[in-house]
Amino acid sequence: MHLAALVSTLATTGVVVLAQSEPVDPRVEGLTFLGEPVLASEVTAGQQLYADNCASCHGANLEGQPDWRRRLDTGRMPAPPHDDTGHTWHHSDRMLFQITKGGVGAVVPGYESDMPAFGEDLTDAEIEAILVYIKSTWPERQREFQAEVSANDTGG
Image (cartoon, rainbow, N blue to C red):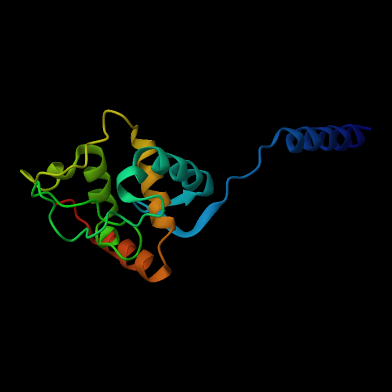
C-alpha cells in the first residue's frame, strides 16, 4: 500500500514540476563573455540595446561611419565598425567593457573621443548584452581570435 502511495505521489509531483518548469534559455554555441557562456536571451536583448544606444554612430549593421580610419575635422576619429571589418574583435572582453562603461579615456588616458561613457545610462548587464550581441555577429575566425585575446588579458 505504501508503494502505491509513493508512486502516486511521485507521478503527481512529476507532473507538477513539469507544468511549472520554465523553458531553458539556450546557450549560444562557441560564444562567451569574460569566460562565461552566453545565453540566447542576452544576445536578443543586446541587439535591441545596440539599436537604441549604439547604431546611431556605429551603424544599424555595425558598419561604422564612412572613412572611419581618417580623423574628422575635430581631430577625433569616426565611430569604427563593430563587424569583422573593424578592430573591435582585436580587443578583450574586459577592455571592450571598460571602454563602453567608462569611455575610451578609461583605457587610454587623455584620449578624446566622441563616444560617451555609458556607465551612467546602462547597467553592467546591459553593456554586457550589447557586447555579446556584437560578438555574436562575427565569423568564427574573429570569435576565436577575440576569445584568445580575452583569455590572455591579465588586466594590466
